[in-house]
Image (cartoon, rainbow, N blue to C red; front, side):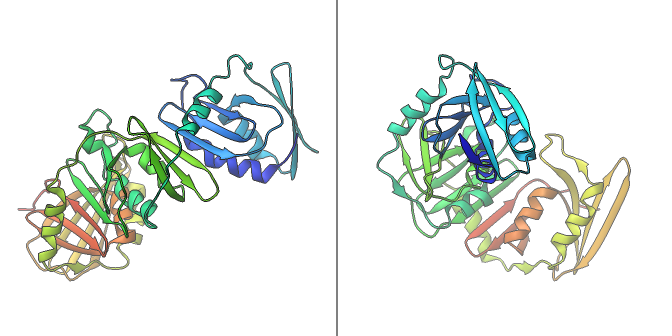
Length: 347
């Protein structure tokens, strides 16, 4: 069959989050071409994209994507023979192994899940923004308590928490169910412009875009702390001050000398608040760098360690902060973030 190279490449890029790094389940690392769609399934996420295919096949994902991505010709001819997928363009000829029809098990899994995709419910227009802003506060450690490793979406509130931080976003409208989604899947889900969802009430929750792209992941049955909303809202009684507009650029500029956090979730920065000044410091084996900026903070000097990536993400949305009881509370309209890790005070 003859296909448009750019169209296929963009579809494969959309499906890549569903590829597994290892074959924990059969075909977890494959693109599965079916009669009317392409599928990726790694045991935790199932992603489908509409696509007409003359003949079904399953091919190793990373290798196939790199081949298609590296081709510059506008059209590609794909053909199957003797369990080999032949890729032909004006300037390129390649062949990749596929698996036999008998070994190709994912189509049955995908069809089974597709049959359960019914009774769709609308999502708030700011659902993806809410999930994206809250996902980084959930623990990446899946051995942690379920509530701390997930993003919770209930009514019109999207929230997440870990030992050291918490985030909350008030969405524009409520959803029907209480969904609890693992942090890794939530991060990927936020990249899809999903507009509606359905849930089988057992394990899988399905999301769908206007273009009929579907994203399926697990929804757990566990509860978030009911006091979390009250705790975050309690900080709104205090006067917040505006962080300097150049703070994010300053963080990004010294990031290169920040050292790795033990759980490899990012880089560590030290932020010190003094009377009307902020000092940001990064250091590693190569050296150190410090920047200072003027701000309207008035209070006792306080130094706190923070994940540079998280702080940069927070500042994209929230630039108002209050420091109270050795905690930093960021807010901006419908979004709140609380940094609760114990700071190191300067004597």
